Length: 220
Image 1 (cartoon, rainbow, N blue to C red):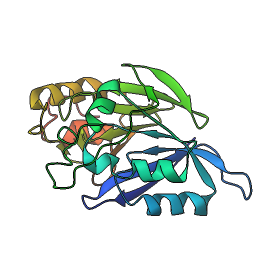
Image 2: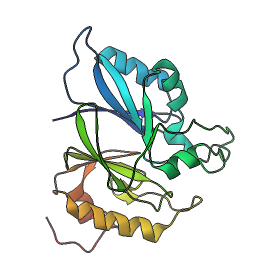
Image 3: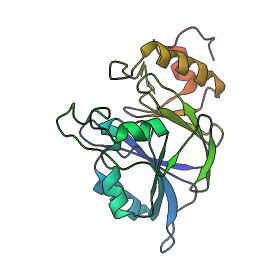
Image 4: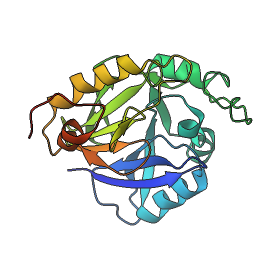
C-alpha cells in the first residue's frame, strides 16, 4: 500500500502529490514520485527532506504552467530525478504559448522529458506499479496515472470533485473530455480514491453518482 502526501503549490493552488511505498528511515532515503510540481519547489523539497524522501521521478499529467512551474528548480536540487510524461505533454511544456505561461505574463519552458509514456503503458517507479491512461480534452496529450492496479487514480485537470476540467484552452475539447472520463471511471471500484489537480479528493463512485457532468450510470 502506497503512502500519499498532498500539498497545494503555486499561485493557482495546484495539488502536488508525493507518492512512495515504504516508511522513510534516517540515513536511508526512500524513493518517491512527484506528481505535478506546479510551483513552490522549495516547499516540496523541504517536505521530502523532512520525510526522508528522494525523488526518483516527476510525473506530469499535462503541460499547463500551473502544473510544471516547479520542475526545473526541483531538477536543479535533485539532479538524479527524471521527468516522465507523454511526448505531447513534453512538446507543449517546451512552448510558452502552449503551456499557457505566456498567457499569464510569465513565459517559461521546461527541458524535454527524460522518458515518454505510451497510451496504457505500465511501468514501475519508486517500487510502485503505475499505468498511464490517455485522457485528452482539457489538453492534448494529458494522461492520468493509475497506482497499483487501481489503488488510486491521479487525475490532473480531467475530473474534479463535482466538476470536470476546462476545455476552452488551446486544443481543448469538452465532449472528448467527458466521454473519456465516462469510459475510464467505471473501470474502477466505487471506493477508488481520485486525486485531482485542484481541490479535494473524491472517489470514482461518488463522481459517477453525483458529478453533474457524469450522469447516466447506475447507483453504487
